Image (cartoon, rainbow, N blue to C red; front, side, top):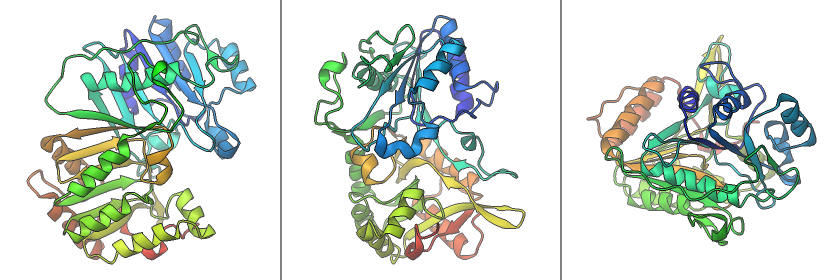
Length: 412
């Protein structure tokens, strides 16, 4: 993922627009060893229009502060000292929410334009999966071309033009920090795979006046949730989930209905549960959601697993940070949104969904190899998931390990 992003930025001729959620000062791109700021400053020095949207957090999200480039006085001093050439604006969401989008848009509006959409943060652990010295992250992103690139770009346009801090003295940086953007025109289709860009945008953040391309009005947007609901309700054979969380009030009942129809459901999540799930479990919160997961697990066609790797004789968790779903080898969605209520209703999120059986089957085969489980394009997804469950019962499913739903999120 990051190798492809780095190459695209090095080849950019017109524009590089990026939305950032979390960024570690230790992150380096794998091809050259450059930092985020070095890579983008080099593109700006070539005359490329380089703009970045950073999340400015509030006191309720200050726990994330070490990994947020929030535009503090020290960070502005560093930008000045390094003569950083990129341009930036800072954007603050509603109280207690997160600007969680992770999207890279290069040369949007041109035939060679490309966008990368996913959940990967700029963190060294995102560069490792199953490594002899570190158990990293399991994550995924998608590269899109054609008209969908303009949709990703116009999300940036709306957020850039409506960024909450854009008029503050410490709310912008660089020569283009004061300049708004116009709408990005659609380009001709490339290939035959239909792609739809969907979002979560909280109410009141952006009006139509903030975007020359239109977009969400003051009531916000919930198109990610709506598309998940449609896909789960229409599932006939199999639902495959890779996600950091499955604590969704809106989606767990739909999974239950799918299981009752005979649909195979495989959910790949962090083995010990993500931190918010563990915190909720120990504080006695979200009781109904944990009970619903336990109820799903009573169905023989529901499988809950987490990846772990053997390091020096000890099983160590590989953190699942993916936000990906495949339904019936017909529908795939990949992006930044976790399957929990804040991501699907409030945090700022961006996903790419596509409909293409051949691409879905190829992705399923690649994921299977990743976990040490064989799959072929001709194997039906229902039988594929059932086969994984059989191998789990035989303790032969590669990195995957069964999670007891009754203890999901209980480990500290």
